[in-house]
Amino acid sequence: MIHKASEIKWGGLTYSSYVIIGEDGNPILAPSQFLAELSINGKSKATILNYAYRLNSYFDVLKNSNDICWKLVDDEDMSGYINGYLMRERRLSRLSISGHIATIDAFYEWSWVHGYLEFPVTYTYSIYEKGVPTSFQKGLNSVTKAYVDQYISDDKFTDLMSCIKTNNPFLLERNELILLLAKDVGLRRAEIMDDRNLTLSELEKFSISTGGNDFISIIGKGEKLRRVPIHPSLQDRIVQFMNGRHKKTMSKNLICSKNGATLNVSIPNNIFKSATSELNDPYWDTRVFHSLRHTYATNMVKFCYENNMDPWQILPEYMGHSDSSTTLGYVAFEAVMSSRHSLLKKLYVRGKHIRRKINNV
Image 1: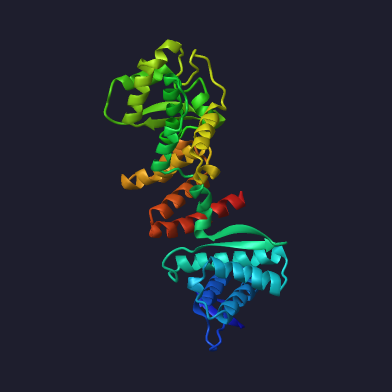
Image 2: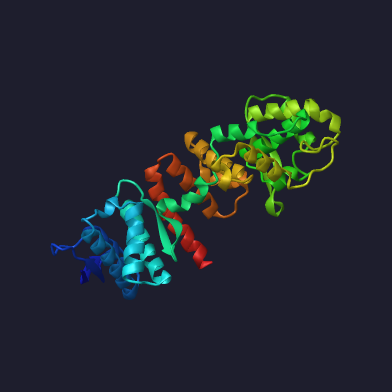
């Protein structure tokens, strides 16, 4: 049941909102407080009433479905609510169903941030249209699903490297370096193949070992120049290649053909696809060469937190990002991976601020 509350006092002002009433006649605290905050944040009465209507529907169905606790709803429960109740019983349009889903999603995110939930909620559900299911994932973690599907673990990367198939030692070394330059340096394929980058004249400094990271200049997307670090083990591999099999090419670039010619920009993709086809593992179905760069970004965020560095400064600098929401995505994904729950709460607020700035541009 929905009850109007017209005397909500906050910050010296009075607001009106709606309360969700349970079967016992008492307000259900979490959704009622959620609605009150919508009012305090300036949402219109019509919007708040729509949210109240949808949440009341949701809580009624949970109560009548063996009294399911809203904190323990699983994927099956959510699909049942959407398909069995909203779609089949109430025959709502896809647009109306999307409104219900958006309300439930916002409520669960609010509940986690405000301490009603111990962990952020992610649920996967399916919408059946003409008997064909379409799967979706919602909740605070849903934004990270794309990152999950792109991230490459160290074990899987080792598998990938083992499946570079060529009988030519030069090509094997070069192709391994192409993959490593994406995963361990975060270079785009176009940056690896650009003959202005990775010149021997700049890389020769690695021959003088410093025992630490050294930096090289990269001309990247939009002709932006950035400096990126190369860790010592990769430096050693580069030097070994330059002083070994690469010498016969007479090329001024690290990455070239056997006869020193410039390579087509599609080569990195071809190397990746060829190796993953050898693996015959569904893990690689969603991953492409650019996934190596995504992996670098996520690993760099983790490195920053482990070494008391600021990823919000380091990541745009090393990756060449100009949009703060891009950094937010990687920081949020790493926070989920590393169970940084207090950080996720801060990111939720920061993400809302970033999106608000973007929408106002």
